[in-house]
Image 1: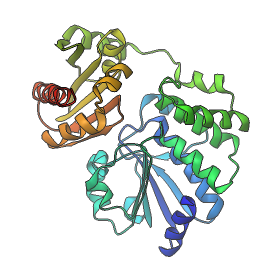
Image 2: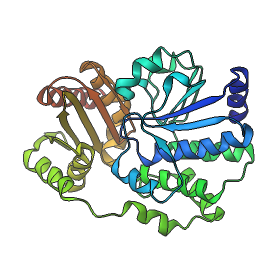
Image 3: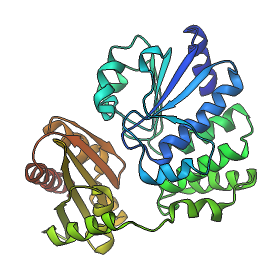
Length: 331
């Protein structure tokens, strides 16, 4: 049983302080998975000090979530004092930017709980990995850990897991049979599905609206065989802009942006593109693109991202080249 293996490691380390780290601009899946996992660990090790950390901040929807659920996130976690460090919902330590060196030089064992394609560089430095690429969200992995351990979720934990899964599956549009099995189990605990889904139904602010419109205005449209690819750039909300381009009709979209010298690229595609081309945006495009740009990339089959260095135009050109090469090789 996974939780028993983790508890054994913590006991061997005589752990007193465990740090659960979430990725840059932590989303609901990361924070909610960390919260529920914190609760599970407390069932087995009640005296253990456990902290959820997000040294690179949390995103706007998750900030709103924290106002409704009793989740505490430290934006300045004490990495040096940790007995054990968990990377929650991230496939590479490089996603933590400025604190990467602190983690790599720490004497604390590092563990991963994630549903993305694993990064070999990070798994090599980890003492234990719980990775399930078939899971639609990391919260699904945590739910199954509760089930394996035959531990009953409390209502707050169940609400957190439901919300994290809803966020990562776009309100269950990307869910599979396991997703709905788990959602049903959480509703049985007492989750009000309709109420929880409204957590992410807040109005879009004007800055995000402008980013989407600018992405459309600046988009370069490329037709490759039967597929329409949209490439664009904005200074914020790259992921939202990429999703909007796909919603408007592109089969696949890549939107890049540069802030404070740091380059970000968000990629999105529809299910038809993913299934017929066989392209996994995380493994096949984002990971190699991250390496080409001197950074890191990863993600899901239909949603992925890159954090790197360099120029926007170069990044988009390299992205398009990778896409064309992969589509050609998969024919």
